[in-house]
Length: 279
Image (cartoon, rainbow, N blue to C red):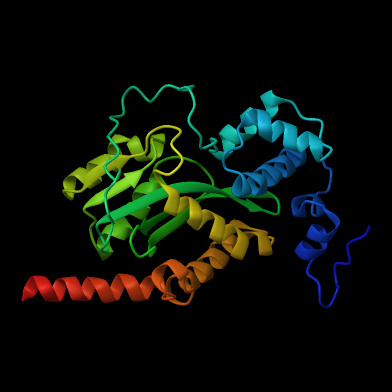
């Protein structure tokens, strides 16, 4: 073993980078097919975060280059389980849920210049040391402020609905944008937005930039929090993510925000808008 777990100055992640070993591989202990599938999903997650345009063929080829004898059928199954789909223009390979209404994309060529003009949401895979959870977040597009988030061990719509209800206790957007996942197209989810008078917007299938800011959020969360820790339990993941999102909103400065925090932009500009409307 070339990795020194207790090295005083170089982290395990950095040591893995230096010798070209995927970090997920370091923590892998072969204990049957389930553990191996877990390793594959962790590797897919890290690579997809770097190259979200990798579909099944490229991801399969990349894993083979890492020394894993996998086939496209298995990688397709794992990526579907993770809720991953490469973001590049392609033929429509899956049919939309016939009972769910789809809405047009409303943000093309729209200048987003104020808080609550548009919110966006998405779901991503978060690995645990043994297992995984799904993370959903709702973010204000203009300020990058994360209004609400939650994790779940399943991909049903319930945790997305609960997260939306918490976000709406803070404020209400003019436009709410999501992808066409069944969680966001479900009647139980969209009827809340209709009730609140919110315009519903949905990404075009396979379009790269329709929900780009939440894709950037996932990359930030994973590289600054998830990949630096090995969550043992769901409760530990929740604690770590709660601490990180507080940091992200209130302390982490963004170059695109003039080196201010999302909280500064969201709160200050909302107050200014409310003052102008009251005048």
